[in-house]
Amino acid sequence: MTTSRINLNADLGESFGAWKMGDDSALLHIVKSANVACGFHAGDPTVMQETVRLAMAQGVSIGAHPSYPDLQGFGRRVMQMSAKDLESTLIYQIGALQAIAAAEGGRVTHVKPHGALHNVACADPAVACTVVNALRKLDPTMILLAPAHSILAKAAQDAGQPVRYEVFADRTYLDDGQLTPRSREGAVIHDSQTCVDHVLRMLNAQAIVTTSGLHLPCRIDSICVHGDGVEAVATAKAIRLALEAAGYALVPLCDLGSD
Image (tube, helix red, strand yellow):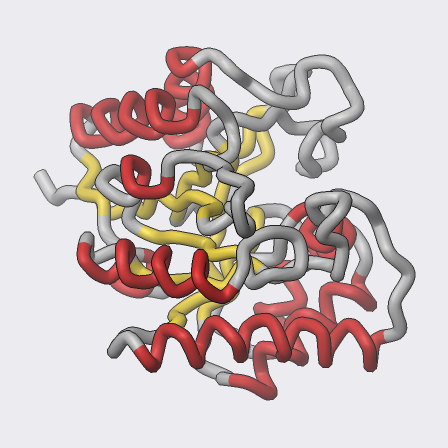
């Protein structure tokens, strides 16, 4: 039997100064790709550098996790920005992580927007195109990690930017394929086994499975576990064990083929 390859990713590097968020060291022993905060919603240069070092030591691929400039709101507040300002903000953040990775002998291989920027880009064609344009100016070979069934993924496809498709282990979905807003009850799944069941259900169906039971067929390259919850490490570990038991080989995002 041919072993299927899949990626497990987490949003990391979200500590800032004396404020600590998550257990990055533990998660980097489990996941295969790290989406590293770039200082605009969380993270700082020292945290970015340390996260890159830890990721490289574990053979984990490095991705930039840029956001709206919203440190106080953890990047979860929608901001009205011109395409010009948003593009330069993205290039600034991704470029900073590229410089830190290069200084450590590594490289940034993918980008995944954070929080409100991620949600808006998944539904708004203009914002999605701005994100993709920023990537194309920096590196037309860089992977965009985007949700299946999103306008963001389609914008990358249309522009010829490499794209890989993710689903979320710890978030529920609406019938249009968008994440359930965090303001609604049941948007976030906290129980590790429920997350495992959610992931396996989607992989077995090769579809996003919504809270109403609707199946939205899609390609699934990567599973995301958010790193900022108290249950993040236990959930990531349970998902990895379940994936391996189901016959999946976990690999860095940049080692997944495009076909």
